[in-house]
Image (tube, rainbow, N blue to C red; front, side, top):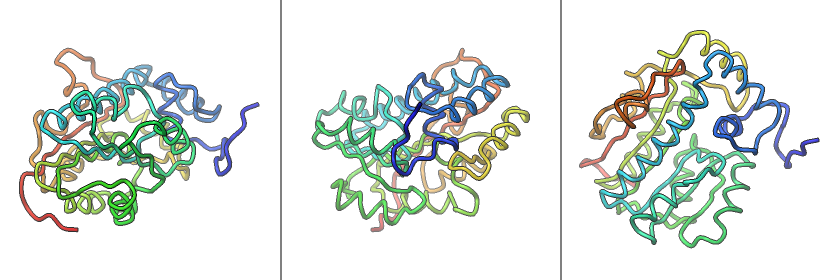
Length: 266
């Protein structure tokens, strides 16, 4: 019988654990596997898409690192999967500072255990929907210097932020704190996905932490207001990885923006 840590409900699906299962991990429960299997029954390529999304994250870290960024903030980090952000970033600079932020107690426990031996790599239990709290703690606990460029990563996060939780406003709060030459990278579920899949996943996750909202490419693009949008723009993640990758029934778009100028507020 699976035993859940304190504060974890194994009877309700969890987005990080569903994603972990799709990536082939073992840190998930029966309810998470059931949700994933129902998605796979409609769209068998969803497991492939999870790997595309992971590779988008890796490529975004490399893009920022090649540009000279040495501070990385992985918001909604999820259960660790190698290569992790710090592994990729430290291919370019072994002193790169990395912070993994997640509010899920299972995720935090895994991150904290994994990262205990790495100087300059921190796990933080915090909620991206409270950006002021996150920013304050990044400064004081993780020693992130917002006078220098940072890369803020939100892969598979924003579609779990409901409209009444104001995703554009919370992104603007991070943007305003970032120095010029900083990067923001995100992925998001698109409303151009297969309608049956949208209906199935929405029904399975209603009123849970895995509840999802699908948004239009135009809405996603607006999240990068104040940034220079890097080519190829806000497009299905496959288009960030190569020209010959297949379309999938679930559409996950990715976007990367660079902050070149403008206000830098505390």
